[in-house]
Image (cartoon, rainbow, N blue to C red):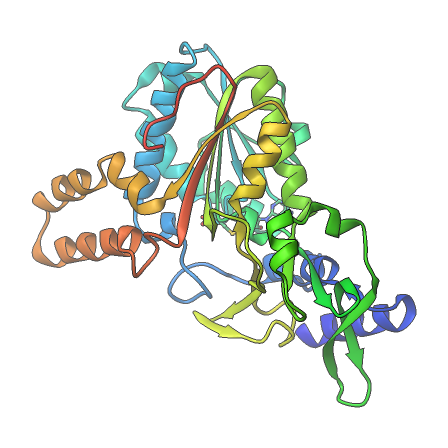
Length: 361
Ligand code: SAH
């Protein structure tokens, strides 16, 4: 099956020339027949990686209460669109909806909207969220223009990036080519560049050396712009949680992960997850340009501790037997320890310009 994507991409390169990193990533992740999210089971111990909501229900429960407080801050509107971008197995939404029942008026105001590209994952979400009324959309523009609370955990890192590389004569786009001689993908460079370099922050342009790489995700920029416009017009908030950098940086962060291990990004595309770090500084700039306010980024550790995750873990543990108590302690450590997800993962909120900072930020 993965052989097929390699040969499809090889033929595409033979007829159209080398691919941008974004085109390669898009095909590897979402090709309808062979893409990673279309065909593989990414999540959990038997999958390729574990996300925070799959580690512990505490994560989604706290975000559910976060959403309830944000809703109250909006004046408790009668209807609120609760939107999730890329829900994976649907665990986070399921935990959020369960926790929201603690605030019944909030719970009954919720209309759930989900953005999901993979038909296979849509089906799993349908099963996880059975009993709830959910509307699926292909993109953010499809969601009705009402006040909304949007959650995006490990969504932006899955969106295609383009890379540019500094050569002696300036910036070039980094491309994926096929080597007939070696029978494998290999890196190449496009003609001297390019429309992308104009987005490069000046301090980075000044310090870049030959061989340095800079990444930009036009898809992520488009998503953040659409979210921010909705929020500044109709009200609401968005919570973005992902790994990435708070300050724009140079560097190649494209990575492939299979079975919890790092593999080459060219190794059997479609069979491994491909991601890149999120540039939170760029997200904040784009949100501001679209008329919204941003809060953070802060670390996942500071955010979850600010929402009281340690107290929640202690309460849960108190009612449990030794084995489950240890499981809760270990889940807590995975979520907040600096050596685990605690500091690599960042949290940023987007709100309308007249709003205060949401809880935890
Ligand atoms: N939020 C989940 C899953 C993260 S994996 C969790 O925390 O467990 C990324 C998710 O985004 C998957 O559901 C994937 O199918 C979806 N996705 C990736 N690219 C997408 C795109 N361009 N449009 C919509 N959904 C996308």
